[in-house]
Image 1 (cartoon, rainbow, N blue to C red):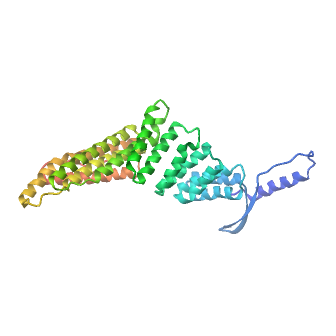
Image 2: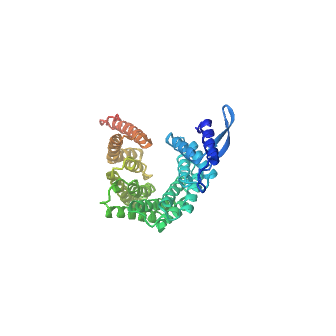
Image 3: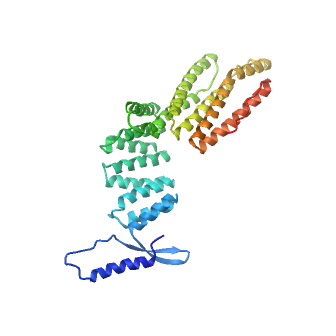
Length: 370
C-alpha cells in the first residue's frame, strides 16, 4: 500500500534539484523524515520508502477495515521509526487502540502509558488512562485498574468533566467489585448515579453507558448475594434464608429495572436478561430446597406437587420477562450474545412449563417465535 516507486523517485528528484537551484540565501526546505525498508512479499524482496504520513493513512485504512493487527503495525512503525514527528502522539494512541481492538491488551497498555508520560495532565493523557483501565478490566487486573482510575480522579486532568467523573466512579466501582470489596463498589456506583441525578440538565448524559453500567452492576452485586443463599434445614434457618434471599432478590430486581428504564442500547438488554434469570434462579432454588427426611414417599409426592404450584408464577414471570426482552432487543436492532441467551432461556423455560402442564393436566404456554 506504499506509494508507487516512481512517485518516490519524483519526490527525491525535486528535493535534490531544489538543493542545486539558485534560491535566495537563507531559505530552506524542511521535509518529513523518510526511511527505506526491505519488505518480503509474494514477488520477493523489495525496497519501500516509508514516511509517517503515508503510514498513518495506511493505518487508518486498516483500522476502518477492522484489520486491527495491520493497523497496529502501521502506527507502531511511526512511533518507533519517526520519534519526534508530528504524527508520533496520535500514532501512539492509535497503536494502543488498535491493539486493544485486537484483544492484545497487555501490548496495548505500554503504548497508552507512553502517551500518559509524554502529555501528563492533558485531556489526551486522561483519555489514555481510560483506555488503560479498559484493558486492565479485560485482563481482570483489578488492582491495576483501580490504580489507573485513581489517577484519573486525582484528578490527573484538571478539566475532568461530569461525564468523565461519572465514568471514572463507575469504573472504580468495577475495580472494587473485582477485588471482592462489594460495599466499596456499591458506594462508587451510587456516587456515580447521584452525580448523574444532580446533572440531569446536561445534554446527552442520560445516554452515557457508564450511568447504565453503574445501575446494572448494583443489580449484579445483589444478584450474586441472592444466588449465594440456599434453603437449608432446619426450618428456623430456612425461614431466615427465605427472608434474606427475598430481600436480595428485591434489591437486585429494583436495580435491573432502573437500568432497563435508562434504555441504553447496550445495557438495557443485558439488564432484561439478568432480570429474567433472577426469577428463574429463584424458581430453581425453591424447588431445590432441603426436605425433611422423615416424610413418606406419598407425603414427599404431595409436598413436591404443592411446591411446584407455589413457585409456578416465578417460571411464568421469567418467561414473560424474556419475551419482553426479545422485543426490546429487536427494537434496538440488537443481534448479539445476549439476544441469543434470551432466546435460549425462553425456549428452555417454555419447555419446562409445558412439561409441568402435561404432568398437572393444565394448559401450557405456547412458545414465542421472535
